[in-house]
Image (cartoon, rainbow, N blue to C red; front, side, top):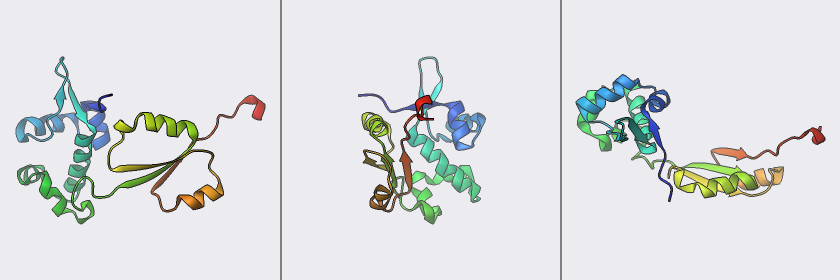
Amino acid sequence: MKESPQYPIGTVARLSGFSTHQLRKWESRLGLLIPDRADNGRRYYTVQQLERLKILRRLINSGYRIGDLAKIGEEQWYTLDPDLDSGPAHRELRVSVVGTMICAVLEANAHDIPTSIKLEPQKGRLTVDMLESIGDVDVIVSELRTVTQQDV
């Protein structure tokens, strides 16, 4: 089985909106989000750690201090912002994926997809009838066939 993806500190900094300096200090001073280390000492973060950083970003933007958040612990973060509900699985993102090839790729890599995302594969081409049958989803991802010179 393939391992879950891990991201280097620079990528995590860009995706979370925190600097690499902040991430290192929080790790050393507060013990927050201890990343895995490669043999060369480089830090690598999991998808779950990145999600926690996004929650921290939201709480800090709401006026909470990182030191206070570290003291109360992650379980309590969800009580500070009602939109976070009760935890990481607070709301499942429903994604309808339309197309034979894209469905096959996603099914082969299902272990890399966060559990907060519910994929609803729809093999075939996107049509008006299919759109009506898909129902209430958050995102629709549709495969488009490649246009060749012969099609033009």
